[in-house]
Image 1 (cartoon, rainbow, N blue to C red):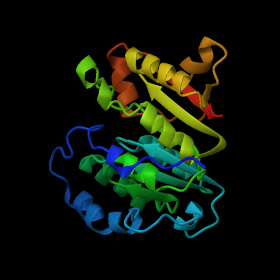
Image 2 (image 1 turned 120 degrees about the horizontal axis):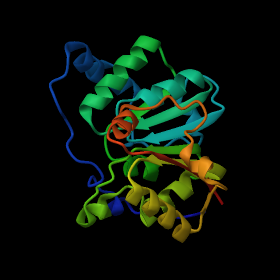
Image 3 (image 1 turned 45 degrees about the horizontal axis):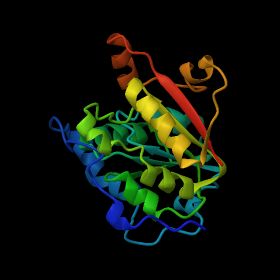
Image 4 (image 1 turned 90 degrees about the horizontal axis):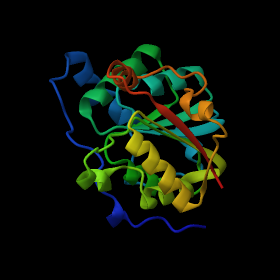
Length: 233
């Protein structure tokens, strides 16, 4: 069993501002009433079977870190009702938007956390997650800020601990330097096998991919995306 990373190695430096424009009344209501029902309580130890967070039989567990506008998380949760999803997003406006969609669609298979994802990773039991999605994470493009990129040896070790044997880590980005950064860090870690055999394997979106607003923005600005898939080894 791998030791859990020490909580002191958790930081909020991976993300920037926490709130944007004022929330609409319905969004504010969702934050006040629905988020407390769905939010992980990290003050208590994680259940031995993380699937017990849900009130139905869960077949798979999936974690999305930094879900942004929530388009991907909502789409995946709706198409995979037997999968339990945990979504982490510190940006208040994004969380409010997602909660509105959860309520409108009556989704039962989403649990949430509105702060630093490393806190969730350190809380989760060993080998409890089938897939981690890190999609269009902040690339922190300036070299002096690269230490804030979520992909790091410390966080890859966190991923490796919570992922089940043979589980999947999916990473998408439109920033070449971050794609290369991730490939090098996963190679150096040694616990993640990149699944691409030819260019089309990492240039083609994942099956059932709904697209995101960040991806659309990148395409408008002339940037293509890479979709990396790694298997825990």
